[in-house]
Image (cartoon, rainbow, N blue to C red; front, side, top):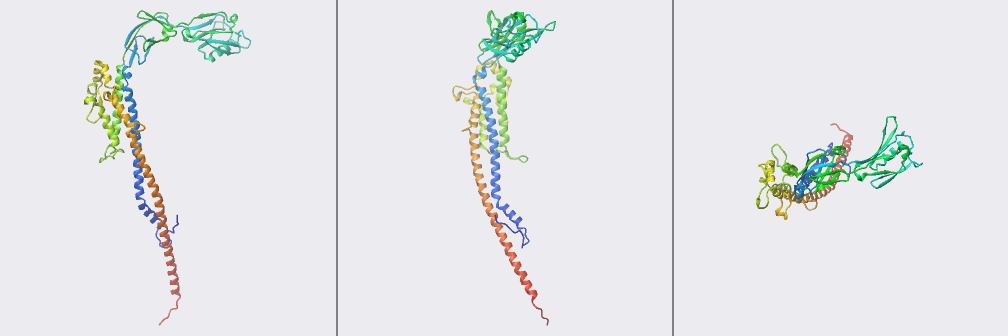
Length: 446
């Protein structure tokens, strides 16, 4: 870039003049930059809208699945029985009586010894622990304390405990971590001449009477006691010696389904509110929303609101879902409860995926609209973002071209003003010379 001589001869601040002229020259580029910034703001808003719409699609898809409406809730009349269900569970009511509580396998040695007393027959301190058919070879220093430490460090499913007796010595007790016969264990190389004979409490699983039918488990868990229903006996049952009775009830989980419907309505309204805020026009007190005039967002809003109408323009009002005067959805929980109690299957069909698109329920329709908008490859929001990105690329190219153009214009102005200052300097030099010559002429008096 050519240098300039600011005001050398003219006295003018030509550097400032050039900067001001360049500001005028750069007005078209400034407009392009403002347009680019606005496009980037729109893209950011569209991406946020796409994310929210995708989340709505996921929640709607979950509610549109038939298994969501088959959710069962299990309760127990006795805290000693815990119960869980799967999707295959059917409504039922069971009366349970514990016939035999489960017991953990245990070995207790009869003779007490000091913690540093040797208790193994192997001179090198090795011994084997077999739990449920799996054997681990362990190494210790051969003393009672060393054996206990090695067993517990192995984490093989048993716990060794030295129990202090009245004279300060210890008896070894080993207990399976899990109840039932599957956790039976055995030890090798234990010196019974020093530790004494082991009293064995054989681990057994639980038995329960189910309305006259005897059910047995190798542990305290009765998996699929009836299809889809698992019952677990708590620790209190394990310790008790008296049979315990309780009632297990499995029924339709109305509250869970109702909460899911309410949550979907809330999330859809949240998205509608966001669209309204982003597409709002300018008023006397507020600026226009970043998506004001954007047809993609407004079309999505309209399509989502129209999902409350199904085939034949039937609405969801009888099921507690309808629109208000503000263009939002409202959910009447009492109306839903009444309809669901009268016809659970019919209500479920009004929400779930049908055999054809025309048969889809409300949740399935919401999912379809949301997925159509937010699909990562061909969604309407995705396409709008792609179009905006193309515009930004074009603007970026134009801005870059203007950088080159403005640089050339500044160079031209600097050369012009430099030439002007140079010319003025030359004229001033000539003037000064002429003035000196005139002053040196002799003066004549009359």
